Figure 1 (cartoon, rainbow, N blue to C red):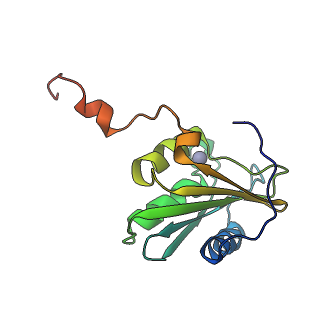
Figure 2 (cartoon, rainbow, N blue to C red; figure 1 turned 135 degrees about the vertical axis):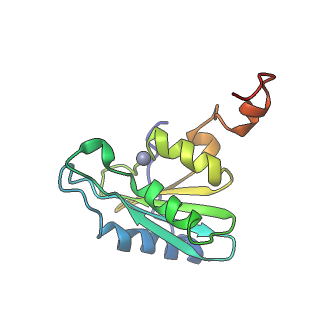
Length: 148
Ligand SMILES: [Zn+2]
C-alpha cells in the first residue's frame, strides 16, 4: 500500500472517540525494546469500545501487537459485530497493521473500517485494501479432503 497523505479533516464523533481511546491506551504500551508504542481501539455495532496496546518481552517473539491485544480483549469481553478499528502511532506516516494482525482482523472484523492515525491526521482503509487475497474459512470449506 502506498503511503497516503493523512487527512486532518474532523472525524465523525464515534470515530473521534475511538481514536482518543486508542491514544489513551497507547500510553500504556509496554515497548522497552522497540520504543514503538501503538494503541488500537475497536468499536462494535452497539457503540462499545475495546482497546489494547503492544506488549513486548525480552524473549522478543512473545510480544503481541496492539491490534491483536485489542481484538482478543474485544472477543473475550462480549463484543458484537466489529465496525471500526483505530490504530495510532507517532510514526511520520500512519502505521498499517502487520501481516499477522491483518489475518486476525480479517477473521473477526472483515467489514470494519480501519482508521490509521498519526499526529498529522488519519487515513481510512478497508480490510480488503489491507488483505486483498485473504485466506479464511471459505478456503477450508472448498476442499474435498477429509478432516484429519
Ligand atoms: Zn501486528
